[in-house]
Amino acid sequence: MMSRKKTFFEFWRSKEERQALLERTNRLKLSPAQLKQLSDSRVQAELQNARVASLLPPVGTEVFRRFTPESLQALKRKEQQRSKKKDVSEGDLPKPTSDLEAGKPLPFFYGAPPTEFLNTPLEELDPFYQSQKTFMVVSKENIVHRFNANPSCFLLSPFNPLRTIAIKILLHLYPL
Image (tube, rainbow, N blue to C red; front, side):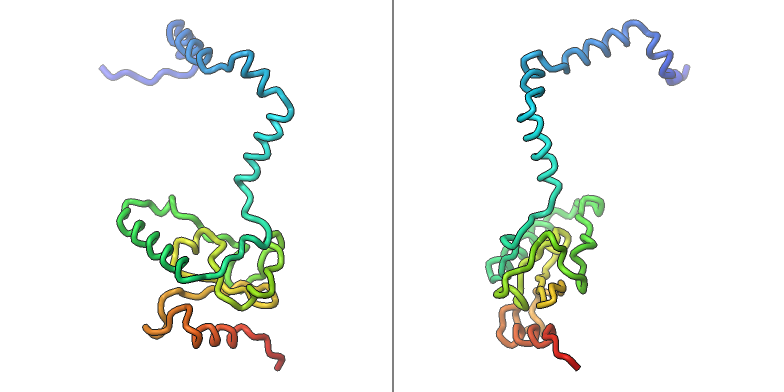
């Protein structure tokens, strides 16, 4: 004989099940001392700030870091770890941030990058591109450009002077 699912009202009418549910909820309730601590306005403000701060992207010019051989090695290590974990679903991967797309201006909350970081390879700010082998370059107009960190023409690394000069020429604003 097949048992049919109970409706919400049939469940609620069942005295034993209702009693078990109430006992479980009572075990999950906070004690009066814990409630008093949470009612403190400073604790509530701190909890709210912590929740909001975790959602915000990094802010300020301290987020800009040069793309170095060490950061390239870190990218290679992450790529090797990902290749070992082939069971990662596509839903778990980060999505590209629309504010940091190539060809768009850098969002204002990052601030203007220091002049020594303009037209030089920088580590990625977007988590989506951090998982790939790329680096970004911010031009003088604060436009984001992305480049592949693999060797160009199979021999020019991202740190090769010829390649860095080619990137600077490519991004140089020359009035026509």
